[in-house]
Image (cartoon, rainbow, N blue to C red; front, side, top):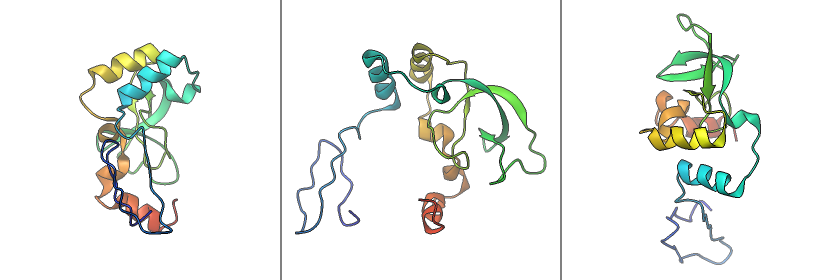
Length: 143
């Protein structure tokens, strides 16, 4: 896989040597909105974690993060209870929340359609840390 270049779904990299695998990601071009519209259309039930809840969070680098022993809050960062939603569900050490009252699929779709930030642009704490933060996590055994 390391030697297989990433490609967009509509471009296929057919060069591969014997023993290598071809990666295909049919959802690569889907947006966050596409995913939620699919969930609504197919009436897929989701766990409550995907919707807005009141949670204890603190502000850092423009994001609401969950307090934990991994890194927060630091001095001067105050924990408060807010109604937030996680636009991506990941590890609390690298995923931020956004203010939200979207507690249904329809409200989530409306919220995303009005947003001018991608879920990664709004909530990837590692991207605010450094350009190589995710690679650093890999080296430290995160994955």
